[in-house]
Image 1 (cartoon, helix red, strand yellow):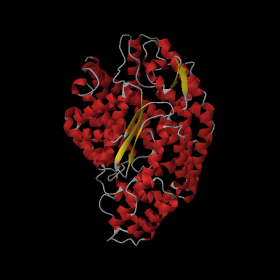
Image 2: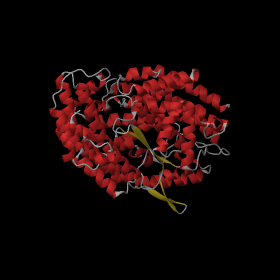
Image 3: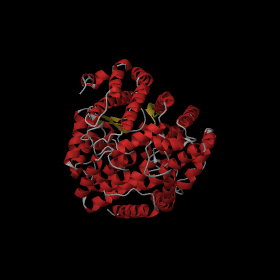
Image 4: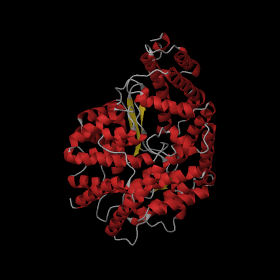
Length: 579
């Protein structure tokens, strides 16, 4: 190995202090080194090592701004990285991809998908887009700051919108309504700021596409996301299948909930999530599930659950606890949402979320741990480029884990609940999964419309109206009369629309894959977990349909496959009501 690459620091914290003038010589050496069949694997290993350093630097800076959006120094360091290193590193990475492609050399078995991806990235790469991609990242952080700063005064205390979520489970309906209206009023106060950001995002994205030779952003984004196994038309076919199969099933769930609550109609504050979909509040006399009050309890019981699912998965989670790779509880000035990222130098994942003591926090941690296990399972692959699976399968890892862990939610099996509560938790999870598909269809259909009608979407009022139209098509069962402004601006609270355009259909496709994994587990839990782990270990070395197949599932968009899944879920829901 060249002496220059041997001199890379072993500690990424040291590398994070480097300027571009220190990083650039490493890229230069790789770009001028003669590439032959004899030294190809060594060159790939050196490139992988350098990319890991740069990638982990970017992710650690991002994490620092997520855990505290008010940390001005962390924000300054991240912006400095985005301005002075990120675009130059991206350009240097592209040159190395082009060098490999131009060599005509065949890397070792297992690198075929990466070559295909590199060819696509080479096709769409433009130097002029590098500062625009940096600007896009800055706009994402501006969105986070707006959402992260949203607080209200509740019972004399300043709380974040997410810290208000437990109130949405309150059995007193007027209290829930008051909290819901207070949160919505605060969110609507930022409507103008978010509309301004929306227009900046859309203009920037259209310019990205035009610079790369595309007439529309969706065509560009499809290649940027490396989607080879399905098309926008497949997504629309999936929407239609959801409309035919899932919307009636979701409506039945809402109707059952309305009857249990003895209400004339369900209103948004009769749901436990302010987004306007999801779990219906519990009937009078039913106490909300309260799985934990302290972070230490959440960690310990999830560790026990994972140990029951698979001892190796339990070991992975213990590693994360011991190495402080979890930031789980909500607080002021913390970015919204939850995610799992990876630190590729140390080959470890990091989980970020906003827990407040609800069952949904348990589900979030189990979900993100599925992503984390994916990181651990792919750590054996020799090259950085091989370790990331497509997002459509990455979400099978997370959603599949939610269902594989379900049998162990009971305290007697290491979890949080009584047997009756555990049955209720699974029932509610299945109900919410069914109710999620229509919402996913709204989000994806809205984005398909936005980037098919770019000029119209630049007008926020038109986007509002189109969102409302999709909402009324898919979201039946809840009465939004008199709340049109609150409903039509729901898209502003959907982080993916701003952060990661078109990244949402993955959740719907993955949920269908996860239900198939769960169906297998109902027949043979051990075998289903083994297939799940083997599929995760493939990383990005196989095409998407083969990854699904390895996990015992099928990538599908059709009515028949969805019908089989929904019928199974509804049968199990009925059984759990009788538990």
